[in-house]
Image 1 (cartoon, helix red, strand yellow):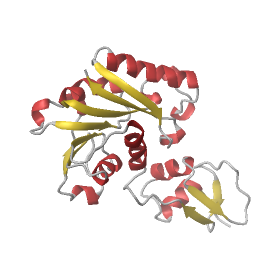
Image 2 (cartoon, one colour; image 1 turned 135 degrees about the vertical axis):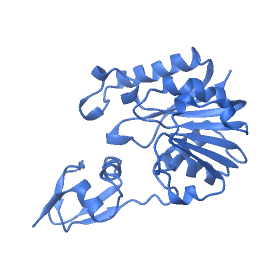
Image 3 (cartoon, helix red, strand yellow; image 1 turned 180 degrees about the vertical axis):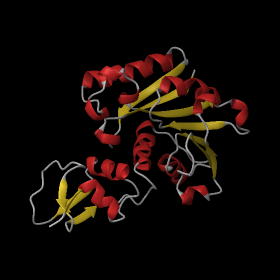
Image 4 (tube, one colour; image 1 turned 180 degrees about the horizontal axis):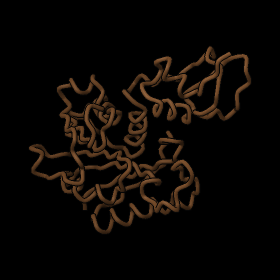
Length: 248
């Protein structure tokens, strides 16, 4: 009987569009398997399984990606109402955060990403979404937007939030709210990041959070309103943390 890596099998069956997304789903516990061969309790993306194994996926139909569920949790936790607001999604990617804001009745969402062609087609054609592709958030200007942005959500990778916060905070309305997703693996020195880009040490998590806190409340002069751990792990199983900021 032929055996394949679990992540590769998921992609070959069309259950996920990329191996990366399949790996995230496996690590998040969204993939369930059944079959004649015994499988590890904590199954990994690289586990070889029978090619004819029965696979069940925990569906997340409410949003175009798991990011929407992450942000929904943060909006509820920080008690932020997106209804009727003009919002900005920095690092929009597929659009999970954008989709969540729309489903929470945002009036308009500016979806900003340095990449191109990533935003889900349903959002791309939505009249309440303005797509800004190929845009590096480090160089955003207040003059780029005609309307006052009342809510900004940030989910970026391979860059520190300390490079994103200054320009983005300048765009936020004086009475606005910002939710940032802190990813320790992109805030710490490489020596503090473990094998495979995973940060497992709780002390390192606190170090990353402390770095962002110090920068946000110091150099960027923002008010730190609160923080919470994301209930959904990030890429590779990394823990992530939401913080709520407001202008001074």
